[in-house]
Length: 85
Image 1 (cartoon, rainbow, N blue to C red):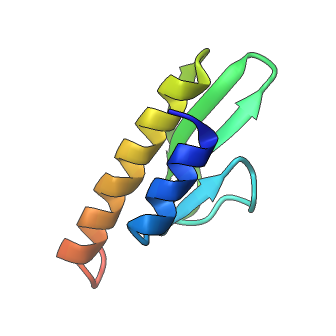
Image 2: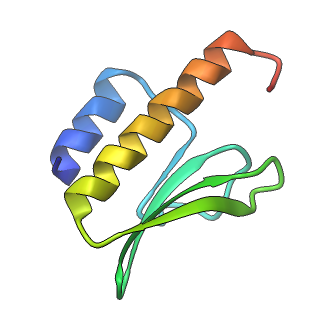
């Protein structure tokens, strides 16, 4: 998966609650992706905005695939539990 493909999926499916390559600071209950000197990290944030569940990838394509999967899951949870989960 490329960055362009991932962005298209996010936009076409109107997905929310994600942090795209450090576009913002940590937000509560988001999924984020970032690039560092050693590769890519995909993570979720807690209700306090603390990163957890960090998974490290050397492949951008693998990181983006994991990121999209986690964002889709989070958005399904948000729809199922609109008052919070």
